[in-house]
Length: 294
Ligand SMILES: [Fe+2]
Image 1: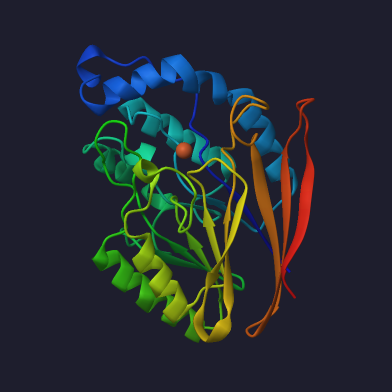
Image 2: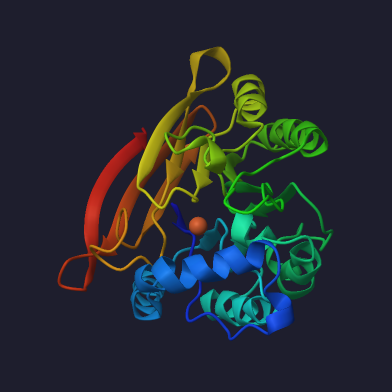
């Protein structure tokens, strides 16, 4: 049995003090939004409790699906690196960027410089999608983080990455691995259009044709499960988690993370999901147990 933990959207707080020259364009509206609303939602004490509880479960691997940053100030990438390292070694932690990590055009370089060991192939090749093999798992990291205009939170995979994803899914299937796609934006969502994954329809097509065992995402800050069509009548669960720092009663769903206990073998995989999250009293507890396969 292999245990994979999944958390997302930590939105590290507090926000570093920005320099005036850094607050141009999208960062200016994002800064106002942070000061007015988001700083009351994303609580570092809540995140610390979630991380402590997750580490106490001693998972075999940890997946983080984006949005470490808020408005992509240079300092947020340095702090993000320290936070990723607090989770574990780059070999034990896989990260994919979200829209807040790609908030402005220069964010891509900052993310690559600070976080590359957590988002690269086992041979340290950079770029997306990346593939990592851990026990029975074939983890595939997809990036949807692209800069967007103010008030937009859209994501885009792009045709080149989608074509490579199809090949990687086939490759890992041939290796008889349990394929887990890590992606920030949900492939299916009820959220507003300005938050959507622009090429979700092509991703759904790739999954329907090439299959995957599990898709893990963040972005909507909600507990979500959508069953996607896979090849030959199979169904692929796409599971989303709330923000790992969301204070109770302040946002959509309060902070939580999921654990997946994966066993069995190709054609007969077993996978049980356990959700653990923060309750009204401020303690982290088990909230749900669900058999996805087997
Ligand atoms: Fe987010």
